[in-house]
Image (cartoon, rainbow, N blue to C red; front, side, top):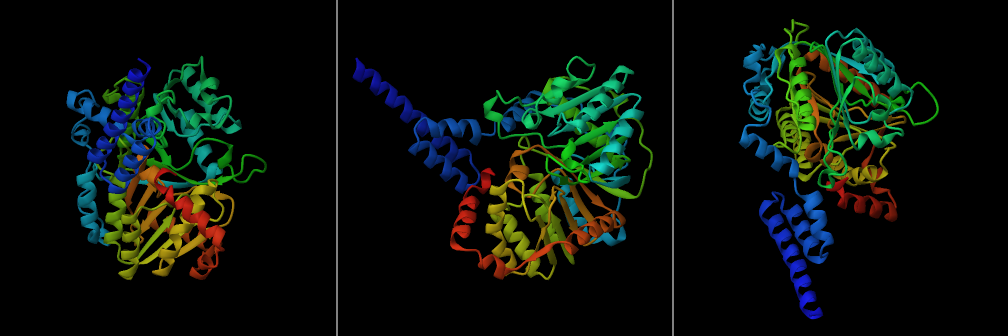
Length: 477
């Protein structure tokens, strides 16, 4: 009997490994990923299949497809721009006409329309961004919708918490989405601080749902009264107050105040996420008041995530590189490009386009820093300029093309942002706005150290081995 039970157990283990390997073979688009999971499933019985089914299978996308097929997902929000009579941008500005192909690409990839009459204002660090956000919260009369990845319960977090509770007490409809992993960056959690108040809280993918541990909501959205928006790369916490001293270490970043039609799409993305998190579908027109002309920027919200069939941000970045004529300026805290992106950057540089990359000299994630270094020699060898910014750690994400087009928001240039996380960016056609960001970029270059090929070659053997080993784990960092 013992031998019989042992035989059944072994048969089940073998069947599980083979089923997992077969699923990876059929379903994985990247052959390297497929091979890795096949080998893991077969060579590590039970453990390999466990990691494959919890971390290697995109359950979010499958659930979203089921909801779409059943008609449950964001019901009634098709043809969103038509329903609200938003003013879709006509011809691009004269200086951007040659980017028509880039616009056509985004039109096909993104459900949000390219909208005219917007104003986007850069807000540098928490010293500038937080007072503007708190003033908007204090002035709210109807609704406040806030979504963030990290919401610390430090002095800054409590200041935001008190402002949200005060708004809710005076009758404002306040909703907050907190990522269930991001909230754990501080103890007690901000959710504990808000508990018992009239603030409605939604947790994004609680960690007890282990299959989703790798899929986080990295978006940063604040929409007040459906008319004023804030988005960018900044979380909420003392860390973004760079002029203070003490702990936690300062993190420099940039956020953006948004006015105009594009705020309606920020609102829509938040309400889609709210439905995803709570099951409450809010499509009432009161959340979408008329939006007057606020400026001359043409902008589009690009919401991306593992629930989408296409990697929108990745393809838009590739399209922008293909269309660039003069210069591409990239600032990102985490730089782990896949092979297609490396090839696109190199091809852009070889076409004669000036490509510059600004990274932090000291990263808050050492493994990411090591992996990034392993990519730099190839870029430097083919003419791409690389700069290291001195501390404090810079969390800003900018992608600027030819002084006329910008991609700003929450996404980093790494697999986590471009493949796993729920992200939100804005693509902006506005020469004046892009020039502002270029000035910020060049000021960073002026105080940065330019990395040379000789410097990369001079790394000693242990460091090269360490960096190369970290690079092996690039898809998972």
